[in-house]
Amino acid sequence: MIYRNKITTLTEFVIQRQAEYPQAKGAFTRLLNDIATAAKIVNREINAAGLVDILGTVEKRNIHGETQKKLDVYANEIFINTLKGGGECCAIASEENEKVISFSNEFSEMGRYVVAMDPLDGSSNIEANVSIGTIFSIYKRVSEAGSAIQTDLLQPGIRLAAAGYVIYGSSTMLVYSTGEGVNGFTLDPSVGIFCLSHPNMRFPETGRIYSINEGNYSYFPEGVKKYIKYCQENDASTNRPYTSRYIGSLVADFHRNLINGGIFLYPGTTKQPNGKLRLLYECSPIAYLAEQAGGKASNGFDRILEIEPNTLHQRSPFFVGLRSMVETLESFMRQNH
Ligand code: AHM
Ligand code: MG
Image (cartoon, rainbow, N blue to C red):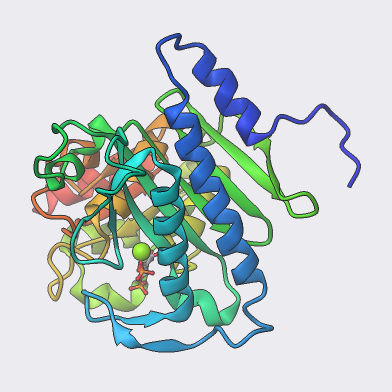
């Protein structure tokens, strides 16, 4: 590959940003570096998945009763082991583990950060060679060493130190924010380096994509049903009807809507009043990125980032995307409550 411009690698970028904080000791730089390393290993495995016998299910079910795919298990282990070995993270909450994994060995008891993650999101798409992702939330530890570490993970999104995702798609990207905008890095597979490709990502001014699993329509709340009809109505002044796009991988659906302008909806249903997506490691980190990119994220009534989590795996209805589209959805929810 021939680069036309000077490249900025992820590592360079993080070091430059951290240099603005004289008190920073490099711990966050190392932590993000660990996440990037784990992502590259998972990426290599995903790319080879069609070639080796890694597709399919393992005999275990995870705590939500879903069948775990081999790649889910693999990604979980890689992220846990890399973060543990790195020493900057003292505990992890993962979609694949019921309880907090805390590191109290010689490596990590001093770690100042905790990480909540969905190591392989969109796992129903693995076998179809459709984009999947990793989602991560990073919080600063607030408890004293030796005390209940679960409290460090049960923090609302407004206290995030950083959040991001990796999308394993037609190219592999790492997108993250530390509260100063959103930046995206594309993996150059020939050298194994994430390079800054999408600086200061922002939602466009307008958008016309709506993303929802309409198969669940009859279980949706009235406000969502009316909003879907609104999206489908003909009105040239608001560029409707909108267009429907749904991959079924949150990371990929959000990433497309961030770039092209749209709203993603996973409402509560009569069967699952709190929806499907998990607050700590799916909704909050994506909400954080959305707000940092000028968008909005809501449970239909309240700001996602202000919801105080009570349990590690709690779910929330989730609406995220272009600010004006989420606000319209919220007005339908309020009117039909
Ligand atoms: P997973 O973490 O088990 O992969 O589930 C989360 C995924 C999201 O990526 C996606 O938005 C959603 O589930 C799709 O659900 P559905 O198949 O019900 O449309
Ligand atoms: Mg998930």
